[in-house]
Amino acid sequence: SVKEVEDQGTGEGMRKWDTCFDCGQKFHGAVDLALGWASWKTYLGRPETNGTRCQAMAHVGGALAKSRPDEALPVLEAQVALLLRYGSRDMHLVISTQNSLALCHSQLGRHDKALVLRREIYAR
Image 1: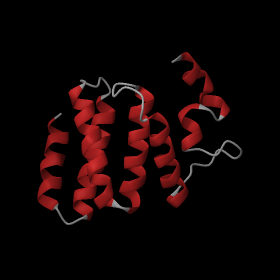
Image 2: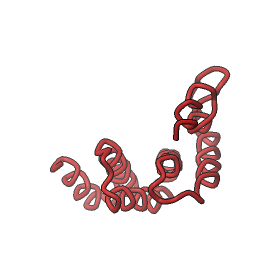
Image 3: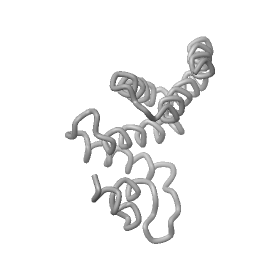
Image 4: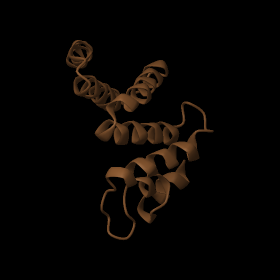
């Protein structure tokens, strides 16, 4: 919505979940993960096609992928399915999410699954 776009520079909108309003530094570690979950809980009630809801899901998946790849898998798999189901026009987001999913599989020693995903990515 217009309000969400206008709020990007004020610490409102999605930026408030990943960037410190005072210093502009990106959150990381446990704070990033906690804020990822908080953003997901905030926007979960919106329709599946809502962009802010999708960004919140991406935030949780990305934060989990950094420290808990086993927990990130179902979130990233759901996000890829959602993006493909509704024919996302943002192929960068689809590819980025699939790449995160492949990385999680690699970190968990599932190199065969990671290879299949990476081949899908490079075939695009």
